[in-house]
Structure formats: structure tokens, C-alpha cells
Amino acid sequence: MEGVLHQVLSGIASGGIYASVALALVMIYQATHHVNFAQGEMATLSTYIALTLINAGLPYWIAFLVTVVVSFILGILIERILMRPMMDAPVLASVGVFIGLLLIINSSTGWMFDYMIKTFPTPFPGGPLLFSGYLSGHELGAFVVTLVVLTAVYLFFRHTKLGLAMRAAAFNPVSSRLVGVRVGWMLALGWGLAAAIGAVGGMMVAPIVYLDPNMMAGILLYAFAGALLGGIDNPLGAVLGGFAVGIIENLAGAYLVGTELKLTVALIIIVAVLVVKPSGLFGRTVLSRV
Amino acid sequence: MPALLEATSLHAGYGETRVLHGIDFAVEQGGVTALLGANGAGKTTTLRAICGMVRTSGQIVLGGERIDGKPTEDIVQRGVAHVPDGRGTFVELTVEENLRLGAYIRKDRAGVSRDFERMFGYFPRLRERYRQQAGTLSGGEQQMLAIARALLLGPKLLLLDEPSFGLAPLIVQEIFDIMHRIREDEGVSILLVEQNASLALEIAEHAYLLETGRIVVSGPAAEIGRDESIRRSYLGY
Image (cartoon, rainbow over the protein chains, first blue to last red):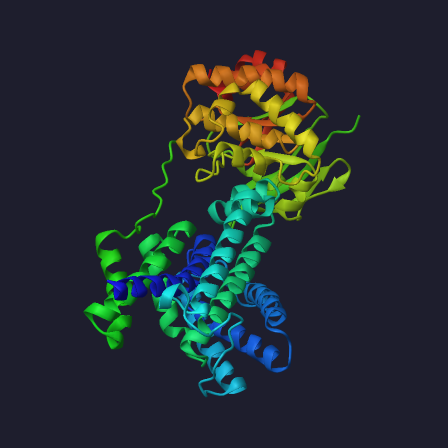
């Protein structure tokens, strides 16, 4: 029984990271109806930037903040330079750009920072495990950080004018322009936010899985499974889905399929959701009377 | 007094298809100008052209400043509110959020909350449905929401695209009654596109009649309404 509790708790901890990457995916999906396959690689690049800053002697939290800001700007630049011209392009062309972006970022991080697996520091006390051995200090810390980020994002979208404008631009670009919302910039902001959220996810997961250019490949898959499970058009659902996938993954890894086949669980979840309930558990069915 | 909006030899179209073939019209300061015509005459396209939603050539001058070729957002900033055909409701958002978006470009918080109250005065039902998802409103309620959203911008010029479309006659009457009040109280100039010509001519001072992208008749609304031959050949009543 203690073992189960341990698996659930560390499932919640890694689930938090899936949740933040899932949220990043959903933010761009809502605005563009495309899944950004490069979201994971963007997060990896951000994590390398953080590592470089830390190695250069910056205190962890300063490096953390700078990385989030730099990632935000990079996200905006990618939208302005790469995605903007693709606005009216067919879906497959956009998918092509996403995959190209994935390969380019992946290779250039490998080229700039080499393919050696590196350790990434954690700002949280290590030492003895907390909660009588159920959670490591980093797991608990990462969980809290994720929760803070998710709450901040939620409050931003629910209670600020800019958040409302971003949601409006995602739902109805034509009407948004007619009330004066600069839709193009809202999209760019969405990319910036997604990149920033992904960066936090990357920095939180790196101490657990170690840093290499392919670090996020598996995590993106879990995050995608989480987003689908919760409903790809529902940010809150995606977050809950992320946590659920974390728990399922850990339990299945421990008791069902073993750690080697854990990634398969993500694929099974994806297929199962698409077959049984394509809109996900919390996917909204929008009612509209005309 | 110079006209609020003046269009000169305005052409517009979608891709290769040309819809407007050089029309001239003006919207006077205050009051209602009606734009009438059959389906496909180019009424909706005219409104879209004013808002920079379609490619145009020719001149559009708003309050002495050329606005043709500007992005929609910039034209909206200059005080043009557009209730588009299909009403443009943000169906996923609540009534409250729809209204807040209407006031998006405004910085005067006190003025905005005063205007919210005034909108509830015109449309009490919006207050009842304040927290409801806008997509669940009836067609008439969505039309009221769209008009309120546009007025919250505090516009100089209000473009209304077929406010009667798809609504039951009683609801249409209700909305036009409210529009009479808005006309008196708000000091906003209205360019009204309608297929229901008799309703439109009743509320308007001036009217233009469009046929396949050209203006065929223009004049005081009362005269056009009295002219039997125009009514028979163009307005069908």
C-alpha cells in the first residue's frame, strides 16, 4: 500500500510537468488548431539556456527568470517570423513547418551544447526524502512551481483584459478585430506564453530525467496524451489530463508493464481517447443557437 | 456640416469577383442612413469595405481622414463599430465577456461601467443572462448583445448589418423600437443595411438603393418610401 501511495505521489509530481507542457500545446491549439510538435524541443532549448546561465554563475532563480523571459521572446519571434506567413496555408504545410522546427531546434541544441547527457541543478533541498520518503524535495518543489504557474495562467486568462482578448482572438478572430483586438499580436503572445510555460516544464523535469537534446521527446508524448485525455480544446482539462497521465504512467510502470514499456502507456491512452471519446473527458461541446 | 463618412468611387470584391463597382455615398452626422437592396446587391460588402475587411479601391473618408486601406483594428480605433451579418457573437464566452470585449479599446473605466448600465436599460434581458454562455442565447437576444457590444465601443459610426435577419416579427419590432431610442439618446450615426425596406425607411432620414454593386436611387427616406415605382421595382412592397 505504501508503494502505491509513493507511485501516486511521484505520478502527481511528474504529472505536473506533463500538465504544463500539455497546457502549452493547448494554448497554441486553441488559437491555431494546430499541435505544435516542436513544443518539447523549444522547452529543451530553454533548459539549455538556463544551464548556460547557471554555469556562467547566475543564481538559480535569476537564471530561471531570465530563461522564462528569453523563451517568451523566442516564442514570439518564431510566430512572427515562421508561422505568420503560414497563416492561410493548408494544414499539412503548417505541420511541415512544425516538424522542420522540431528537427532544426533539436539538431542545433545538439550542435551548440553537444549530445552528452548532463545533470541539471535543482533549487530545492535534496537530502532526506520528505513525507516519510514519499517525495523528494525536488518533486515537491517542482509540483509547487507547476501549481503556481498554472494558477497564474488561469488567473491571467480569466481575470485580465489581455487574457480575455487572447481567448476572444482564438475563438473568433473576425469579431475580435471588429472590437479592436489586434489578433496577430494575440497569436504571437500565445506562442510566447506557451514557450515560457514549456521552459518552466523543461527546467523542472531536467533534474529528474537529465538534460540531453532529446530530453522532451517522451515528455511531449505524455503531455500530448494528457491534453487529449482532458480535451485538446480545454486548458483546464489538459492540466487535469496531464496529472492523470502522470499517475497512470507511474502506476502502470510499477505494477503493470514495467518501466521499459512506460511510454507505451502514453500511446495507449492516445489511441483509447481517440477511439472512445475524441473530445476528451472535459472537451467542451459548444452549444450554439442561431 | 460635412458628412461623417464619405465614400467616393468605392470598388470592392473578393479575389477575382468584384462586388462593388464604384459607388458614392455619405453618412451624415447623427441620424440613420439606410442601405437597401436585394440579396447579393453588395450591402454587406459595403459595410465590410468601410471596416477594411475586404480589398477596396477608391476613397473612404471618416471625419476628414482617409481610412481606406487601413487594417480593421485601426478603423475600429477611430470609432467605427460594426455589427456584422451573423451577429459575430463570441459564442464560447459569457454575455459579460462579450460586453467587456465591446469596450476593449476604451480606457475610461467609470465611463464603461456607466455604459454597461445604459445598455441594460435598453436590453434588460442581457442583465438576466449576464453570466450565461452567449451561444445559448436566442437569436433575438444575440442581436441585442451584438448591438450592445458595438455601442460599448462608444462609436461615432455604427454599422448594422441586417438586425432583423432570421428573427420573428415581434422580436424585430422590439429591436427596432429600441433602435429608435438609441438613435435619439446616443448621438451616434448609423448606417443600416436591411432587406426589410419598410422598417428601414421608417427609421432612416436618408437612403441608398443598391443593385448589383451600383447605387441606383438615393434620396430622403420619406420620399423613397412614397415613390410607388421605386417601391414596386426595387423594394417589393
